[in-house]
Length: 403
Ligand code: CS2
Ligand code: MG
Image 1 (cartoon, rainbow, N blue to C red):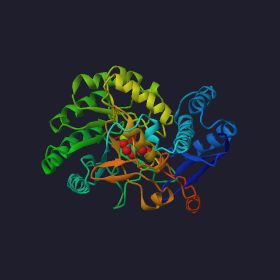
Image 2 (tube, rainbow, N blue to C red):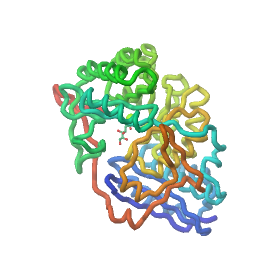
Image 3 (cartoon, rainbow, N blue to C red):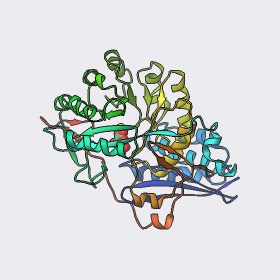
Image 4 (tube, rainbow, N blue to C red):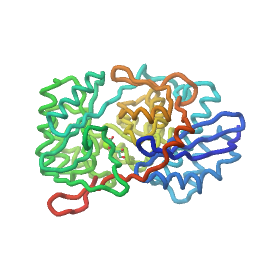
């Protein structure tokens, strides 16, 4: 089966998405997500200018060979733009192969290892009271796991908290907006947030929290200790992870489970973290970590060291990524949990899909392929709108900090 055409579709049904569509001489097509929040056009160009010309005429079934060609053949290996482009090609080819076999994608990955996929919701509050209400609202929707974030007293704008009453979308301006940060204020506040949430919902609900790269290792160790009474499912991105060994200090001081990896793009970003069991969940995703092919390699390494998967699933990853991820989640033996931030209704209209949510779990559906399509005519009505992620500055002196 030969690849006859490939095109990149950039659209903005409320936020930007980059989608790769591959067509074959047998009439089968496949979709891959290539969305990289705030750098979408870089991936679109990488695909259009450097990858697609290499695909035409290739055997669509040769997924692994194509992956190796795009990874080794670039000479300049790794990085979020390169690996998101490779991921889109890989995901589209897996979609095609599953359609050719007339099977849902998970059947090609070894079949189902579970009946359904546990997911977690986001509860974001302006303050503690609002966060508690949001947790209770997600529990009422059936979620059994909820990530809790809230505003921090004394800080104007904080990660995870929507401006106004709309859903939280961090990419909020044609140039990066500036948020302020103070770790001391946050460290005093976070334990109070979870005291209140546990008080309101009891011990059974799985609670998660995203530190979003903002603490030093010793501060993260402190927070992990302070949150131990609340038995979190995980504390995410406690400190920047370029220096994987930084997690040794956190690990020495706390039993709060750790999750990292949504910004990782290859196995090399997490090899030490996994092999030394410095983390409990690896958050790498289909769209940013080289597609299904590479994500399976990461998951297999993680399985050797009792690390489980916890794929990133924010709204800046398209429904194509969510669909493919759910097939991966249904099959991977060391599955942990899947993030679920539902897309807006318009996005769901642009990307019709077979996956579904029911009482805290999701399922990818049984249609051949990954089960996600794109309404190109509708997508064309919503052209790209430049939007950047915010940056963070320390409140007391303006130092540029981790957002
Ligand atoms: C967050 C993401 O969902 C999460 O865990 O870390 O929403 C992250 O802020 C965005 O994906 C950035 O684009
Ligand atoms: Mg995160």
